[in-house]
Amino acid sequence: MKSLKSYILPLVACGLASCNSFIDVPPTGVVDGDLAYSQPDKMVNAAYASLGDCWFSYPFNLWPYGDLGSDDCLKGGGGTTDTGYHPMEIWSTLTSTPGELDELWYRLYCNISRCNRALVALQDYGVEKLGEKTAAQRTGEVHFLRGHSYFKLLTMFRQIPWIDENVFRNNLQEQTPNNQFTYAELWDKVIKEFEMAYEALPEVVEDGGGRANKIAAASYLAKCYLTIAWGDGYEATDGVDFINREYMEKVVEYTDIVVKSQYDYLEDFGDIFLPEYKNSKESIFAVQTSQYTEDNTRYGRANWSNMLNGCWGMWSCGWDFHKPSQNLVNAYKTRDGLPMLDDYASTNAYPVMGNVNSQKWDPRLFHTVGMPTFPYKYESEYMMTTDNSRTPNTYGFYTSLKDVPQRSGGETFEGSWQAFAMNDYVFRYTDVMLMRAEALIELDRLGDAMEIINDIRQRAADSVEKHISYAKDFCEISLYSSATFGDKAHARECLRFERRLEMAMESSRYFDLRRWGIASSVLNTYFAKEANSTYDGTAYGAYYKDAHYTPEKNEFYPVPYNQLYYVPGLYEQNKGYN
Image (cartoon, rainbow, N blue to C red; front, side):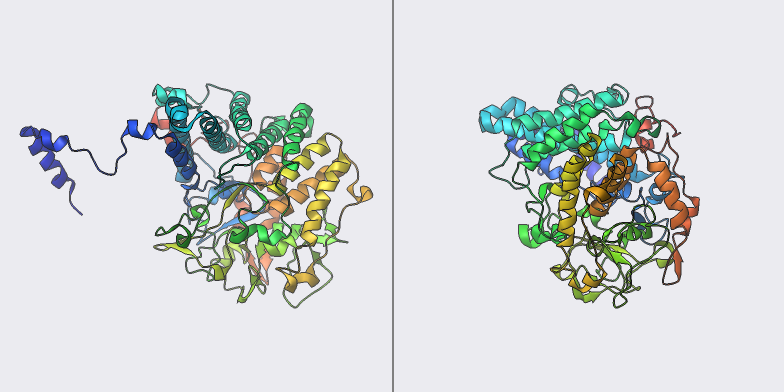
């Protein structure tokens, strides 16, 4: 590599000799600003491209926060010091210093910056270059994309600076504090982003290709209103005592649009997480990925958020992160085909191939959790054993199945890393229907909610023969009757349990617990139990003895240290963190 001096000296010499001919040569690999802004469609494409500018240290799907921070998942990897994610799974040592938090904050604001630039290009050149109709649609898409990044930032960090195209035009980024707007006012702004998208976008986008549409915007509006319907995010002012019925009505209003749309349940649960079905009718909006064989690039546009999550010894670079918990496995137990709501965690259990007993399981277990003695992602030539765990004495023997393809499908490489052409769902149809059911219960429409939950359970019951016929003797799942669904409080528990079973390992669990105002009770109970987990006599998870979740502090992640001191005094820290 050339030294820095070898580049500096010619510039100094040129300066002394007044080498105008040298400095007048336009640089290569740099897009002229005026030229870039005069191509608004390309600026919009750049904003979309940033959705996939992820990496294991700043995964945009938030699995280290929504899954590791919950009772669904253990970190995995080479030990507790492998990456900076260990504090996210035990909470008690969480501070503002992990670089992963800083990278996530920074990268999401990079995405917002691209959106702001695209909006400037559309405002200045959109109608001229694209025509009024297309310019309006592209503007709606960018508001959707900007709302998407702000939703993640607000979900993670609570008190954030609002930097829009006007701040960008006036170069006021470093003068914009994070306490300019309250939490409620920030939600109003995020909702406004999706309202503008909803008004501007068609239900069906003709050129498709992963672009946002009206249904995706409606889904996000429902999610926004569901989030704030429960309270302000802190346990003391969250939960059933703080429910805003007007907001719950908004959830139903916007999910009405989804129900009437072209989207629907995919027939088999297992297909949802196979690359060949990644843009099926289940997928309302997803971050698009590809293999290098599909787009003629060197490495493809793979999902680098999940690059650590391949099974150890199954993939050439399987780093064995994102490992399901014993508590999650226990949650799939059934009794008379229904979830064991009250006592599922009283004893630990797991199925073993060839050893069928009286304990039956929800079929979704075998689509969600890779377990020793069973085929890995349905393929009998790739059987999982206890050797497919990197650090079993720390993290146990289970592996995640949803975020990787089948082993026979191949992998995308970048040096010692792997990645897969697995789309990241932002919204799948079933997720939105569960949000709808949640709101219906709180609005006392228990029968309508039960119908949704039973539709989802019926799909699970129908998802055995195609992929997991080897496990059918282990499976038993039934539908709820009016009698078993019970009163409102019981219906609420059924919905919460169903959401966990359906959405496990999809990065939503912690944020669900926080929304419901029950994170501290659920997680602290989980820590005490999971610290004593065993599989076939091997103990693991002992580090949970040091775990503790503190309400009125841990609900939100701290504003990253580097952001606090980049411009000293500009940002305030969330309460409870130093």
